[in-house]
Amino acid sequence: MSGKKIKIGTLIVLRDIGDKMNVLDAINKRKSVRDYLTDEVDEKDIKTIVDAGKKAPKAGPFQITVVTNKELLNKINDHTIEGMKNSGNDFFVERASTPGYNPLYKAPLVIFFSAPDENIFGGLTASVSAENMILTAISLGYGTCYLASPNFAFQTSARDELIKELQLPPNLNPICAVSIGKEGENKFGTPQEEVDNVNFVK
Ligand SMILES: Cc1cc2nc3c(=O)[nH]c(=O)nc-3n(C[C@H](O)[C@H](O)[C@H](O)COP(=O)(O)O)c2cc1C
Image 1 (tube, rainbow, N blue to C red):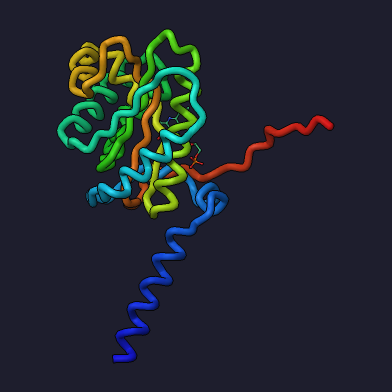
Image 2 (cartoon, rainbow, N blue to C red; image 1 turned 90 degrees about the vertical axis):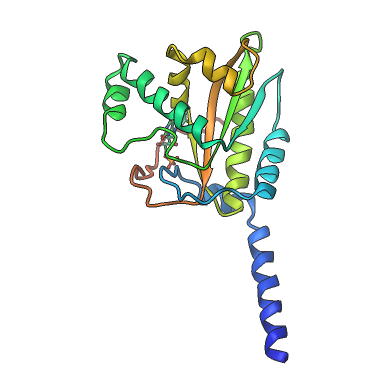
């Protein structure tokens, strides 16, 4: 009987620690995750992540589109490869031709950000919202990657079809996306480098 009590107590303590990962821990833990397990992201966690994105600083209208539909994610993935191959940019052409490369990394959840052209701050607003979501997802135990490559899908002839399937009005332009899920083998992970790009003015 007493053993049971200890077990329950231990579980509560572990959950407590998980819930309390502070923002610096999440920032230090963050890295781009480019391979995901197929496990779906818990609905409650999706809500927590999206709510955090909505609390970011904002300037003007932008749209958050939460996609878990595998068929649509596969379609965007495939058109992204097509767009990258036709981009005329050597880096993207080579990446898109790498065997096994999937620009959406088969993540079970991808959150897309878009904004109307009139919002000159659409890209900035979407990005701060995306980072809030990234850090929240990490604090909940998920891996994430900030993605700009899906924009290539919207430069193909499939643009209108994809915008429609994302249930977006035609005047909204995709800006970036965030892939989220339990981390897999991370085959496409890159080593994190320390960049010297800070100057202090006193
Ligand atoms: C504007 C922007 C666009 C990015 N687009 C992609 C992308 O399309 N695909 C990808 O795998 N990573 C993308 N990244 C992630 C970077 O490659 C990654 O952050 C960088 O290599 C540093 O690695 P780290 O995130 O592991 O620290 C993007 C990052 C930024 C800031």
